[in-house]
Length: 257
Length: 213
Image (tube, each protein chain N blue to C red):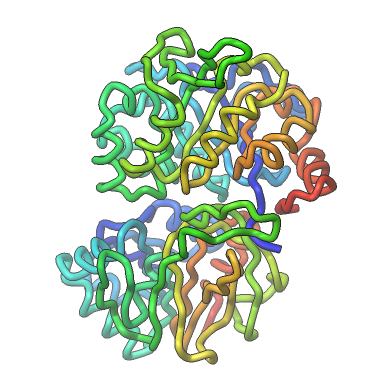
């Protein structure tokens, strides 16, 4: 009996509305991030991740307002990502009530930013998002590279090496998304998850590809992930958070029920 | 009736203040003004990041003396959170060794890097997530909270208090039983984040607001 594995529903937000569709029974205004965050909180989500997917300058105010409203009503950890490029961005989000920020592209273009952010705010609030795509052919030793711009732009960086580097620079947690699996509902890429989990000493959140509750179990038991992140299986009401937690618990994973 | 959250520049003060506002109608202020802290009915000492920076900032903002006086006088309830708990001990191993406020005997130690769980999986440091808190002694702040309830943690160092009577809660991680809730007199301090621990966390804050030691 010890530390529970975490389930993290992810809200992809564009101009103040949750996209990818959300369909909770009984909620009409399904796109409001604050309502959705409250609902996940009531269901027993262990954390919430808020991803500003457009992250445009003009949306910043809306995002800050949303984060403030969520943090005023939802008393579980809140991670905010999307367009975090400077220490001022981090300060703004932490002041709005975020507990952690997720740094993605800016970590690739300027790795020292991660070091600076961890020094200034502490590793506990610095999550580095890693978007990995398999680049080896079938039959070759598996290899994954870091891609940016939603999986379109290769960087040439080896994903496992990059994960190690980011932890050295001060990342307190890694959010690993398989760009091959994201949106496919075919399950996590267990290979890259296990490779990165074994390479670093900080918690790893597996993301990208969840379609069934068995995928969540595999992410933890085979991939070794400390937390699993999913959006659509929860948004569309296919499964609730309590369904997922009970199922994982029945499969021998310690959960907070 | 005012609750002062001490703002010495370290910690997610807004989360603590918002959670307190959620459980009480008392006035919550985030402040570094010694007079407002001294004049408050209750005080929260948060803390996040490296303990060297926390102790350093407490010194720099000239609040070290204010905090020491509060805990020595036992004049009002004080709640320490996260590094705000660790700072109450004698000494921390972090940052090559840091002298702390020495309110209670004991040390702050680091989780080893080679901890493993029962299935052999390597345990991560920081200890991050929801873990069980076993209530070693009864305390008004545990009122209405089940023994073994889960709270949210994120830390790499943990309190190892020397005096068992000051230990109110423990959490097991990789075989280590960390002293995650300690207290004496009008002081209670926790390693976990009640402001991020959903219903049980809010209940603990509510208990703090109603506590009359």
